[in-house]
Length: 231
Image (cartoon, rainbow, N blue to C red; front, side):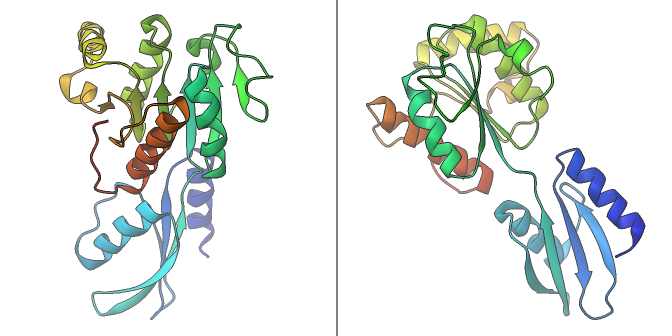
């Protein structure tokens, strides 16, 4: 591999950027394609699919054969709120392959006993996420029902382009949330990315069922599945 390409690939890994090393199996030449780079035609379509799937594969495009070696950061899930839904969601998300972090400044909820095996920070999101900012491969799940805790991470997630942003609350609660976020300077298009009410529309009732609905919606957002967005 070209040392310069390897250097660029390592930099992408450090910065949690998705990249694909494209090798032309006809002449052996490599090139590095970053997610979002404009690649037209059959090869561009194949790249879109492998970025979404996160799996390397061989493809045929424009009459040539390529090996697409995918390097996608591990997805994260940041859960704002150490509530009953979070207790069910965190272990399921870990099984699904997510690096999970639960954040809640309310120490009565954020206890190790309630979140055994899950990384937990009993602090305000502004401080808890200072050294690990939300990025494009983060799912932000806000479930405290408290705007003092939820609004800041929701804003950060939208501005950072997190692949999923969801918030618990009724339509009335979300309408008030929209007013606050508009006053904070977010556009209607940005706010429109929030999944609220949170979770797929499967009729979930219990905290565990809601957690299933949320995780399914997060996976769909990561894999770009065409599924309903409203709970």
